[in-house]
Each structure stands twice: as C-alpha cells, then as structure tokens.
Amino acid sequence: MKRLTALALALLCLAPARAYAAPAEVTAPSAILMEKTTGKVLCEQNADAQYEPASVTKVMTLLLVMEAIDGGQMGWDDLVTASPHAISMGGSQIWLKENEQMTVRDMVKAVTVVSANDCAVALAEHVAGSEAAFVDRMNEKARELGMERTNFVNCTGLPAQGHLTCAYDIALMSRELVLHHPSIREFTTIWMDTLRDGAFQLSNTNRLIFYYEGATGLKTGFTDTALYCLSATAERDGMELIAVVMHAPSSNDRFDSAKALLNYGFANYAITPVYPEQAVPPVPVLLGTRDTVQPVTARECSILLEKGKAGTVTTQMELADSVEAPVEAGQKLGELKVLVDGEQVDAIDLVAADEVIVPIKLDAFSIDGMAELLRQIASMRKVNPGLTLAGVLITMWHNVDVVTQPEAILRSGNVPVFTTVIPHTYVVDKSTHERKPLHIFSPTSGATKGYQRLAAEYLERGRGNG
Image (tube, rainbow, N blue to C red; front, top):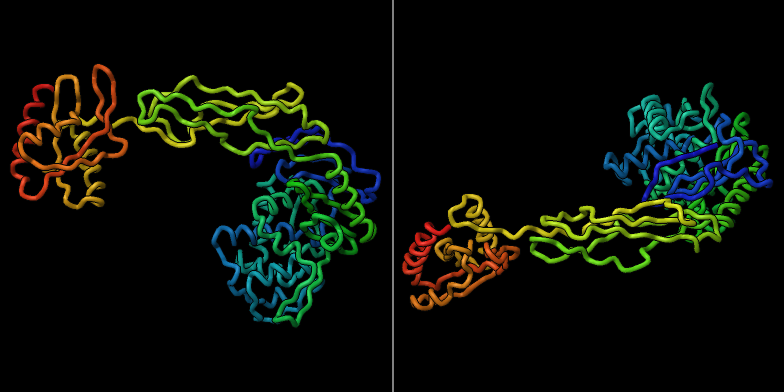
C-alpha cells in the first residue's frame, strides 16, 4: 500500500513506495510500523482492517488534552473535579469519588500509566464541558489527521457500537501526540508511581517500558471484544518508531508482536543527517550596508535510509551570484539538493542568516529623509541626552547628498563639537556610490545659537544644489 505523507521537521523518508510485510514474528492479525518524524510506514500487516481499539482510544484523548495544555487553555496544576458521570465509568480506574479534585498533572498520569477511565472522562469534561462534546472534537481531529477508518463514540475505549479504528489510523494519532507534544513522555515512561500522597499505587500496563531498550510509551488496550491492543513507541540513535498491534489473542502476543516490529525497524533503518559537502560561501550584496550575506539552511535536514545506503547520499548547492539590498532575514538565496544514488530526494532552501538594509540616503529637504533622521536622533538621545536637532548639521553639495566631514568648518567657527556615528546610516556619493558613515554633531553648552546660525547657512546653501 502506498503511503505518501507530508514532510515534517525537515526529514524526508526514503524507502520503497510499498511498505514491506511485517516480520513473521508478528502474530497479531493487524499491525504497522511507522517512523515518527517522517510518518513513513516501514512495514505493515492488514493495517487498514477495522477493530475496536479499547483503551488505545486514549491516545486521542491525551492528544486533545495536551493541545489544551500546550495551547494555554488549561494548566498542569489546574484542579479537575470528578463528576457523577466520570466516576461511573468502571473498568480501569483510580476510583475517583464524586466532586473529588485532582490536578491535571495527576489525572494525565493516571490515564497514561494505568489507563484510568474515570480520569479520562473527567479531563474530557474539563476540556470540552461534556464527554459528548469532547468526542465530537476527537472525531474532528481524526478527520484532520486523515484517519479515514476511525469513528469514536467515547473517550475511554469502553465497548460501544460503532467505536472502531485501524492500526494505520492509530499510528497517525500516536505520531501526532509524540511528535508535537513531547512532554507526554514524562508520563508514558513511568513504570511505577503513586497518587494521593502515596496512598494509591500505579504500575504501567505497558510492560515494554520495563524491559525494552529505548521504550518511550505509549498506550495499551484490552476488552473482551477488542482483545489485546497496543501502540508502542521506542527511540534509539535519534530515531523514534511507532509500532501498533491490534486484536492480538493474548497479552504476550501483543507485546511480542510490538517488540518484533520495533526490532525490525531499528535493525534495518536509521536517520542520517545531511550536510553540505563544502562550506557555504557568502553571497555578494549590492548597494547594501554590508558587502555580503551568509546563507544558511532553512531547516535541519536528515533522511530516513535503509542501513547501508548512507554512503550513497550526496549534495549539490545552487546559490545566487549576487543579491540586491534590502535582504530580509530568511530570504531565499539558493538551494541545497540532496541525492541518493544520484536521484534527488529532497531540496532545502538556503536563506539569508540576517538582514542587510539599504543605506539611508538622507536629504535635508525630504520629509522621509528628515523623518528618518529625527528617528535616529531620538534613538541617539537615549545615549546622549544633550543631543538636539539644533546639534545636527546637514549640508548639500553638488555630488554629495549629505556631507559628513564639516568638522573643519565647525572648528573654524570656534564651535567645539563631538561626533557620533548613526548605525546603518550612510552618505552616498552620487557619482562614485562611495558610502561613508553619517555623523551627528553636538555642540557644547553656550554654542547653540552660533551653531544654529551656521547650520542654517549651510542648509540654505544646500537648497540650490540638492
């Protein structure tokens, strides 16, 4: 089955268009193995077959809760009150009492570690007002993620007519949870813990957390009709895999099948980072405040490869010969192409690391020019409060927009001055395009009137030459 998924976090997966069949050790009737960052299916077995998911349903419940937390709708320390409906769930639970209050953090812990149905419903009601409204959101999110063979009827996974999904859809929602809400791992990796100040013991229903190297989660499920289900996640060497098993005949079959899937993935695939084969040179900038700008990759680049193919990865770099200011930070300057066995598999934009602005071309009789000058002066006054508009001398000559070296004129008029350079503000010679920093002159106390007269004289002289 072809699975073409969108790229995420700059990782492109490279595997055959058709996923391999699951290893023979997978005894569950339906299973799938997916790489987290790319969403690439590495192997599968009847992954579209619909089954009841039991408590693996709570992956979606946790996803919506984490979205509410990370989105600021509620906080970890907010108190959740148990309703009569929540405490009536039965099945796996922590035996909440009506109106008992517990923090969001403790309820999330109870859901992830011991699959507490009462806490799942209490959280759902806290997020959406009622379990029914929350289930509507679950189905809406399922459609958003492309879970085409899923329909939720409740937030717990307790048996209900029409409450169905498939291994592929579970992999999709599991990926969404662990990829975009990594803090969930704080709870899914707990083996044993307590609640209610140590009075209530918790032991994780996911045995892989105890004995499988790199296990990071995620959620078990069981009912008499769903049989044994599992969404298992594990990470090694920077690659996290998602193994989903449905309708396994026993708990051992469930864990053994998930272990076989994960072993297959780690043995045959690896995330390989890609870097340019040579240093990325700066790009010349025309008519800017700097002569060059440094290109950088717009995103990290890694690819999912079958082991043994890392040596076949090459890159090709294409850069603009030059770029004209202004240059915005993040502006595309070129492209880094990634090839495997000579075939292009990805392209990463090369973008400007920072901005390069156009020199400010101040004209004493331009509203825009004077406005910019005043803005610069206001900024400079934060450092030099004595600087005033009367302390600025701009003269206009035939080939120069702004004269920057009138110190001699000022000295000949016996006006003591000091100079300050305005950052990123330049004089541009009209004939040579030579740039010089613009200086602001501030007269000392007692010289203001003479300076104003001198400034006015030269401004008037410049009026005929602008």
